[in-house]
Image (tube, rainbow, N blue to C red):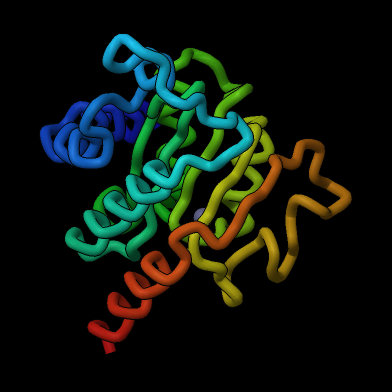
Length: 196
Ligand SMILES: [Zn+2]
């Protein structure tokens, strides 16, 4: 487990991720800085609003996963407008069936903040989470889940077991779906079309 977190923490600091962050957030990825940028107050973002840049970062991670031959899914954990962890699928690389993007991002975020509960944190993921990841999202006490494409076959949020509305679920995040849906879905369709 330790090595998994190590991989993801290293990723967070990699030139690739830094370049992606710089491209998405030319000024800053911190809301505090955004509000005081240029010495005057920038319009304050409603904290209830999803930040489109974070789902784009999840898609950057998904694309990188496809480049490694992995199923293209990416995830980003955010707290107070700052990125805590990013990850893409690495099940093949790590030979670990649990190494879904969400699991790796949650592990890395928990390691980064030194707590098994990601209170006040939000997860952005390019695809509707599966049952395993929905369980992890609940155990991590994530505040909000924002995701891109729906997954009729393997999704467990609005499809199949609908984990967050099941009796055994003791914490459900607020859920927002359909962010950058067409881009996230197209990545998966392209990936599986290439494999046929
Ligand atoms: Zn999953």
